[in-house]
Length: 512
Ligand SMILES: Cc1cc2nc3c(=O)[nH]c(=O)nc-3n(C[C@H](O)[C@H](O)[C@H](O)COP(=O)(O)OP(=O)(O)OC[C@H]3O[C@@H](n4cnc5c(N)ncnc54)[C@H](O)[C@@H]3O)c2cc1C
Image (cartoon, rainbow, N blue to C red; front, side, top):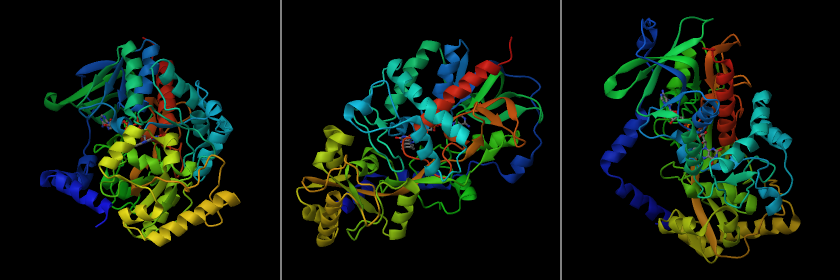
């Protein structure tokens, strides 16, 4: 038994049987209405339980960005959240933010090369196999710096003095929050939101959108509000759907992409389900590309979680780290896109692959305290030599040594004839220990498809016309990322389009 296996066994023992049962029950959960339920005629409410001005469904990055924009204009905002805590996938994210410039001028200070909005735009289109809607990508790339600067300037966000080149990006534009968590970004957003008296209601699940007919505006929502039961709320000025993706909606993801089998874990929060896409579709909204569901290639093989250590394999390769399979050999260009790496891993059939990096790379993408914790819980293993590292991880020593030697030669030759990985001057060879290894495996991560919006943040109907009074932003929408989202691009997407949707709701709100 190698040390990773000991770690897995301890983990399974530490989970009680109740927790395991709950986890498997969660997997089997189907939150879609049955066909019979969906076919029931629905009566428009005769009267409303309550009236609100602007309502935002979801309290992640997109929801808060919209709320802040509306709050700044003086609008009264209520955010509705089905979970008992705010933040959705945003609060558990890694806080990696792809942005081609920033007010701190990190790229210039760290000497990380050239970048531009145009390059970010082109990388994103290429990374999405050109299925992306170019106008939407343009809005994201152009708007990313303002979105990041707002959090720094008004929200007190701090960043690590690091910039990484994430797979599929052709420049070093991966910013990281000071503690490597998305919570820090949500904290910055809530600090800003607090200035505008934005109200948040948790444990309120939106269960319907009210619209009378194909030409009419959205008039309200139905909310399941715990013990208060079902309540119909009139939304007078604008409804923004910022309800996130459906990575944990096993029924929905299987329906659109049967290749993503129920056995595949997910990195998402457990209530990342797709009912808001369905409710919007039921009142005429269009959706697109729902089959494009991303696997995160380097999650924890045992749990599917994207913990702090699962982020190392997305940051180490730009600094010289490598991926190997259970035979100790490289199997893909480590700077490839997530879908390419995930497919290459699944093709190994082994249930786990590994990322190897060295001490010299560490200051480029993590901090010593975080790494220490990873070593303590054996998510990360450390050794002075490659052969010792191989022994600890249960990999063949000679093969791993040969792999590392061969890869080091690529630095001298300035090319990788094996997988054609770009060898950049920022990369460090694996020629001096101590060395580190992290196990990794794909897990369902991001839904690239979702509601169709225009570049002004309005939800568009199946005829291509905006649905009056209805806006959407973030992972619940589709079209920004095409077939494959590049790492660090979800956060600018959610923040930029949240702001766009909020601004559009204000501009188009019926005047009192
Ligand atoms: C573990 C992890 C790490 C990640 N790391 C990164 C990263 O480093 N960089 C990056 O760019 N991206 C990352 N991502 C992706 C990114 O975090 C998400 O795409 C982004 O947070 C989505 O933001 P959002 O506001 O659209 O949705 P969310 O943050 O998911 O918020 C949606 C909210 O809506 C609520 N909701 C849904 N339906 C209803 C309903 N019917 N009624 C009421 N409320 C509802 C949900 O409960 C949720 O709280 C990561 C994702 C995960 C899971």
